[in-house]
Length: 163
Ligand SMILES: NC(=O)c1ccc[n+]([C@@H]2O[C@H](COP(=O)([O-])OP(=O)(O)OC[C@H]3O[C@@H](n4cnc5c(N)ncnc54)[C@H](OP(=O)(O)O)[C@@H]3O)[C@@H](O)[C@H]2O)c1
Image (cartoon, rainbow, N blue to C red):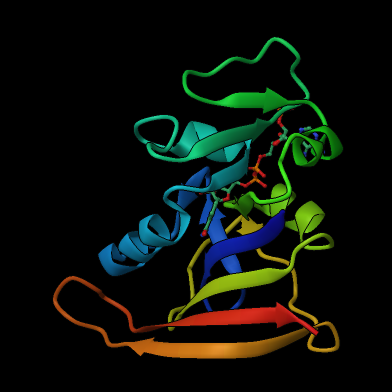
């Protein structure tokens, strides 16, 4: 399997506040959908509960929770990260879609990071992406998206590969 972390961060690596995303950028959401569709998404229980319509369609949804009784429609639940990863086949492309707790645990196993770097600083944040250590990661792609009437901030789609 391959494991990719996909995330949108602002300039100080913040990713969320009070269970919600910090920004609404339609072209970033489109990129997220195009990148992850047909594959597997792995997420923490809090991120799952932040999704407006539950499990993401056209993807295998895996939720991590320590609550053995937790159930969700169209999603598989695991109580350890090791069991969740062990359930994935060799050919599966797995995308960890957050949140902070999941990113901090999965970055050690990841092959690739897909980071939307938003040119903004959040006033308030309580969830952050871990520091990307440039001893371990190399930037392989950077594509600029300008600010426009639908996007209040400019941003970059950045890919990092493990060195
Ligand atoms: N900007 C972005 O790209 C992005 C993406 C995703 C999320 N976010 C934001 O991130 C925030 C949520 O992040 P978060 O760190 O609070 O929560 P989270 O990582 O989504 O979920 C944490 C929960 O996952 C479960 N969990 C974590 N590690 C586990 C393990 N090893 N084994 C079993 N279960 C485990 C636990 O669930 P139980 O409590 O049920 O046991 C834990 O409470 C929100 O604000 C969200 O909007 C941002």
